[in-house]
Length: 382
Figure 1: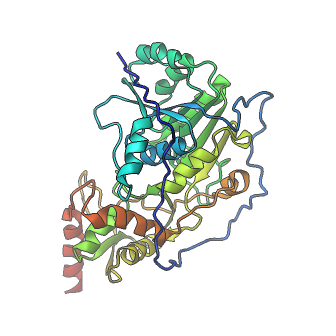
Figure 2 (figure 1 turned 180 degrees about the vertical axis):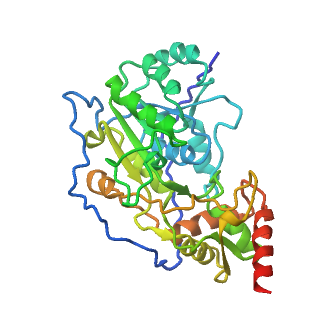
């Protein structure tokens, strides 16, 4: 049985986002080949939005105990909402953020509610959620449509379903950046998220879908910036596939959490999809240099290699897909008023100072693929 514990507290805590003082990084900002004047807002069916823009909400977060959920839940509590995390209870329900004061954490912890259960137990979901009468669901960890349908069944009067999708659903294209109306790939590894968006549209529920590109920031469980920091700390060259001029895009987790809050109760976000990421794009080589600058390291030696000349087995030699991959955030800027707080180096510095620079990281360094690349490189140079 799920157990919901309600603890009353007089005042929600505040979230302090620690500023960085490093100078700006000159990233790559390409002119948009397709201007925002393109129609990106789908017409809304009459009565599609039931959310009131003001007033405290009973909010259920599916997941919420790591990365995105850690920052999102704090912002929602700060706004005065009653926040419940639905998890299996295997991980601590809350954890203190690096840089967060003991008093702020204690205040936040006292206000978070927990509903213990497994979202894959569909009958349990259908029977447990109605009793709580949630107004809004934030689905941070949903991967497949069949994981979402029981929640919709359980909450027929739901005001808004806010879903964390992925920019990985777009069909690979020579015409970039990706816009929200661009073709999607039904065979992508994120097809489950695409199917979920289709389900939400078909059910008539008021929904909003957020499509992040690459996410980075403190407590990131994906080895994005951490992969570079490990090599910089060890004083090693950084192997980058092919020319290193492939263009990609990163968005800070705190900016993403802010965007999730901006769509809550927002009529303009009803039945809409938004790309969320940083405003600038960056090359692979530029990202390596930005990580070095953020962590206070010398400019790194970058080694380029042809991935086709190596057999890395199941190991991943580089943390990004070897292609141009970036999306326009113009829609979010114009419709939601999105204004990312962090530029790239500031955001990387925030991640480094509050996480890797403190000696904490998710994965141990593994330089085995690097050694294969560097060994061949030395042979070619000799």
